[in-house]
Image 1 (tube, protein in one colour):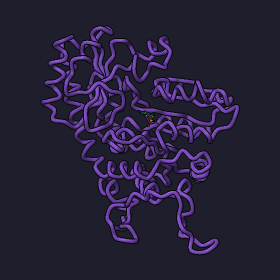
Image 2: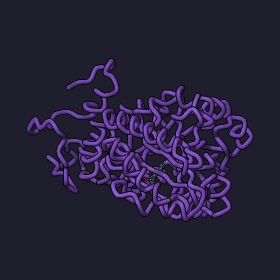
Image 3: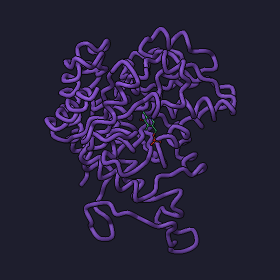
Image 4: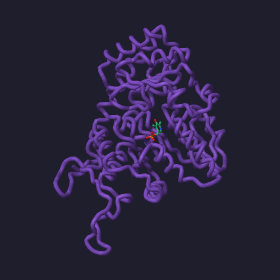
Length: 385
Ligand SMILES: *Cc1c(COP(=O)(O)O)cnc(C)c1O
């Protein structure tokens, strides 16, 4: 099953990094649930010594996602946050990072509540504006941290324009690609140096595993991430690596349905009299719709919309039946959530307001159920508003 370099996206998703198991020919990489490996003689082994350092199931996933993101090497971690934490160990005390201002709440919490203790400094800017990135870069800036689309207001950053600004000042760029998935955009193709994922979301896609992954291109990043994955040890276990590998095989077909259902529900919500505004990059009313058409293959499964007040939001959230009230996103089943009190509760209220995360904002992660059932569920719940 050698992939030649003309292989296309769906073929890469299914085959990259996965050889038939050498001992049996099993077509699916087994779950190597082991902590250590027997050595043939002192100093002679098969490349596997201890399972924090090397595990064949994890290695298969890392090679698979590295190929999917068109990078050089991948490193799998116990969660998306652990992956972000590992990337941040590229920095040293006194370094400064420019960050997308509407970044994931857990990322903001890690930066502000943990990494500031280690003398790292962060500026949160509207990275949709390349001039704002340029103005925020200082002599000590060592990383540009982008997230696009953002959670939950689905604002976009032009990845190529942002990379051009950063690279002109020798600042490497990492993109949190969790919300889009590599089916929709591959940041490395636009110039990014690293891509990271919470595999918990679209890559795994089945809401049954927590994990993270970083894909790097530059040799010094690859070398450091390999070192720190083992040195800090926040590795992804073999069972979870296997689950994510199963997920990436169906990524293209799932994403096509997420895209179709997302667009259909966004159009339904925009036409509904009780909905004051809809944030979805696929709608012509989205302020960056043209960029979305240029940068993204489809517009994804995340929608947020404004109902005007907490009472209205509560009424809707308590009346969907099929669409489950839960945090997280990117699974086959549709989820609905209230960012201000759930995912973004740790962001200060004033910052939430500035970012447009109002009390009346509701977010849906649109799954791959039948669109008529999803529409009917929302229509019924909106009647209760
Ligand atoms: C969920 C998420 C994370 C964190 O990932 P975990 O797997 O929950 O640790 C980071 N970034 C984004 C955009 C996310 O959605």
